[in-house]
Length: 112
Image 1: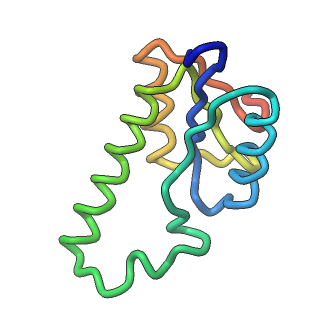
Image 2: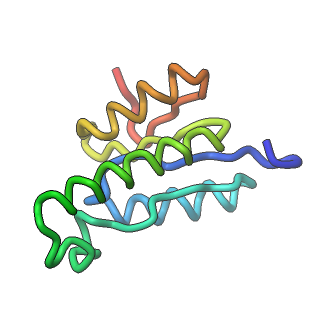
């Protein structure tokens, strides 16, 4: 908590940009501090990856994944953007990390 506000980090595939933006707005209006992704590499920020060799691409991906775990460290809970139930390997890793850190995990779509 930051003051009276819960801190929520959004997690999920960046291919779901519209859903990220809606969740960010809805959760903010509900009185939460929302931490989101820094870029949408799978839906609109493709120029980020242009002209990167494989080694640079790998290092950048590793850095972004690590940064997102630090965002989870700052949060009280995570909110998973799991459109049509989709959860990729990076998001699975973030969910496991959040649970191991004692964070609450909520989902856009109900998980069975």
